[in-house]
Image (cartoon, rainbow, N blue to C red; front, side):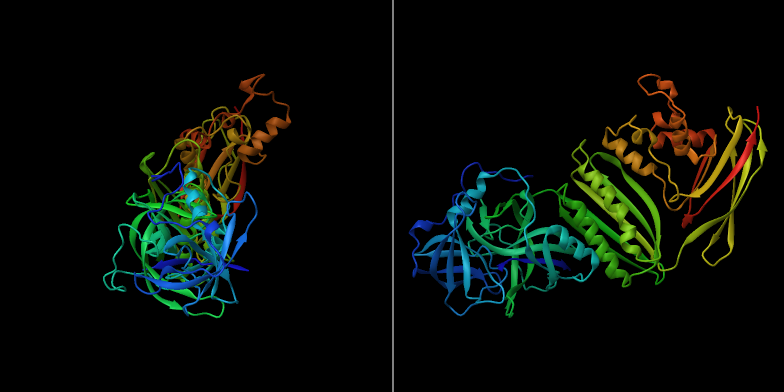
Length: 568
């Protein structure tokens, strides 16, 4: 099985350039057609520190690949100087007769670690022809530090990125490496870091620079990172602490020293980028409060600005942090506040919800956050970068749940009457609490009125207009408004409805079953809820007095009904 020589490290501690023609290295090259078995040379790679070392190699054979494929030939080489092939050597430039021949690409696990495959330099130079495009992820090894590789959130991220995450070294916090210097321009053989997340958490790949151009351009790694095509990953300098031998496959222990440019292409034949150009990024902040231990932890980080990747990175990092900071799994209650800031959200956007689970609260609590971030990033209306996300968690292993136990109100009333409603709720193994409020019987009521009192997570309001096909979301502002209007688990909701078929949706279904005409034939047949967005429905009904919504610091559970008889 091929082993990609790539280190991914998760460490705690514009589209920038497109090229239309082939990449032109500063270094003189030797074409693959001139390579013969028995020729000798060396490759450059950093074994320790920041200076590249020469590793002697000998060409064994040129191996033809599939015709018309991106990679037409590979070259089998043997390391002859006593150094074994290791993860992090991907992209190491191979020089034959003093000329650049290609880059170390891959080797084999649990096998002869002096054998490697080299990708010819002319194949890598064709990377600059690409300008756009995304591809599926490639299988590659990953190492993680500062967070445990065993967290369920990182296991899920591993599956989605198509990489294997293993435990790695720690982050360079500023003092761990003596006077680390970030190169303003790469040299062939320099160690290179490619970042997805950086700050208090780092998710990065470490490999080697193959070739450079006069304008600061570079080729690296000799194979893909995530194989996503046109990208905007920050590139960075790297300090290599040491080379670690392993019976499976040796690897480099390395730390990122600083960002110096951008990777713009991530494809099967390698990475293309340029130093001195910097990509946009997304800021993230995670605050975790453990209410049982009265502690608070805060973590700040940045991620790549990618509409189809950022949500995975933000949710995975924050979920993994919650798993590690709480130090437990199982039942619990979590209050989750999500704030989004962006250029199309001038005042920011915030939503709070509370979740309880008897099984495993952490993944349950983060589902909604990920859904909202994904919808915000992938909506078709506006460019949202730069953006920032702040997630605040308050956690306790105790069930913070209020169960609706009793509802009292009048049995008879006249249209337009103001009535009092009393709701008794019981906390988990605690005393009851009572909430009293007034509601108004509709002016046009005649007959049976149904009072429904429920928790926000029970029989939630739907988007009747959207679900019925009468309305659609047409702007970012509308999308975020409707997300905010959705019921929350911590809400106590009371609604007065003109029938006893199950609230708003029941009323709509009853009306449709009775043979109401379509919008095209008679739009007046539509209920008000079918002509409105949910936010508009709630605003109207709260003003009318037929809807009450109270937010609590608990998950409100249960549903009770009462019948009120009216007569004009």
